[in-house]
Amino acid sequence: MDLSGFENRVCSEMELLKQLPLDGSTILELGCGRADITRFIASTGSNRKVIATEVDTIQHNKNLLIDDLSNVTFLEAGAEKIPVDDSSVDAVFMFKSLHHVPLELMDTAFDEIRRVLNPGGFAYISEPVFAGKFNEVLRIFHDEEIVRDAAYKAIKKTIENRNLSLVDEIFFSTPVVFESFEFFRDKVVNVTHTDHHLTPELINKVKDQFMLSMDDDGARFEMPIRVNLLEKI
Image (cartoon, rainbow, N blue to C red; front, side, top):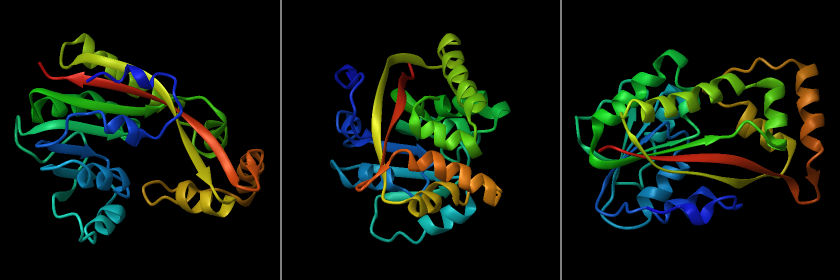
């Protein structure tokens, strides 16, 4: 699994996923959100079984209404307590979800990932880097510097402890486009898993920063991402 060709590229995460050997595999996604990437993984390739977990009850109940992904099982669970058997999955994915795990449970989450992985199975951990114009908008109302730093420390700790071995670490940027501030507010600010309690004054401050990137085609950002590819040996 060589992802080095994506280093410092601007591309969608789906382009990286196409390079991974997932056919004939049992795949676990932790923190699937709206299940957009779940759908991509389950709908491409062949003979894939996907288990997708989500800790947000509201979103999980919405995911249960999805009726066109027969090879996907949706479960309500957090990464620190995964309801699947030992050595039962070939790949584990976390897309921008590790930093949402409670700080005191991140190490436990990696113990769980190792437990459920088959020997030779891999974990793909994708985390946003705390930088860039999009981050400058987000940090006004949701500063994630501490939790993102903790997530990276947890990754390095699991490698140092030989819990999982590092296969690769790459950095790329993924494009993010919003057609309007209202669309951004609906998709990012008003998420069900976090109540941001934004005052009218803070909303206006967020909007002012957001509009600095707005043009006739919408607001365009490039989100810097770090991917750590880990293996159970």
